[in-house]
Amino acid sequence: MTASQLAEALSAKEQDGTAYIRLKMENGKDTIQVQIKSRGGPKSSAIVYQVLWPKERKGEGVLLHKSGHSFSGATFTPPNTLRTLDSAQLRDPLLGSALSLEDVVDSFFSWDQQTLDGTETVNGVNCQILESKPGKSGGSYGVVRSWIDVRRLVPLRVEKYSSPGHLVRRIDTTRVAQDDKGHPITANLTVHDMRSGAETQLDGSRIRHDVSFSDAEFTPEGLKTVTGPKGSGE
Image 1: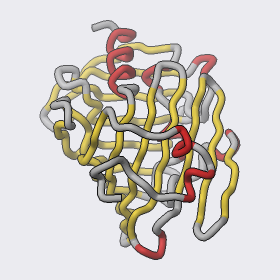
Image 2: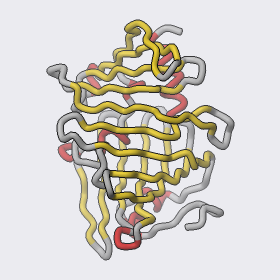
Image 3: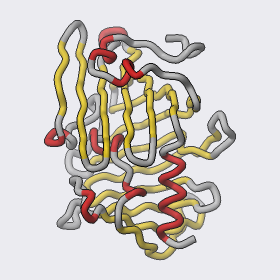
Image 4: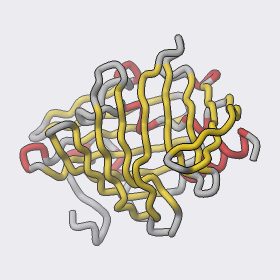
């Protein structure tokens, strides 16, 4: 595949309709379990993170909307603290993790400039290196390099660089699993924030596609209620 074809295939996989995910996040000695509700499309996306456990943090939530180059969002802290987010806060950490808000809402595979930059073996797999640049898309990253397992269409390593060329964040895939459609997905990840030294382990192999969400669930007011799709246990 050409660089554009590979990026388009990866982008289409990211934007595969609606999904519900249970995710465990380990930040050093702190562990939380969250539920994720997402809606993906070619021009816009929306995603909600809500803490399920531990009990003292249950109900903390983050809502993120991306439409074209525009971003909006909100956070909720129980019992009743609701705050609006804007693009200036995209670099803020997601629920105290090594991921930023920008990392979970942006899709660098859909950026304007995509090129191939050779191959390299990662965890015994020969990967194609895809280099993505935002062009007019903007954002805080100047370039993202992805080591792609082309056969499974899964990134096994992602490195994100600032515009001056400094490595900001590295994301390593530590386990690949199959989702409910039988497609390979990145199930376990390790995220390194190269500036702060923070590291987060993510386990998100429980995923359901084509679930039904109400529009209200993707609003700031919807953050106040922790619900999941039918059969999810929430």
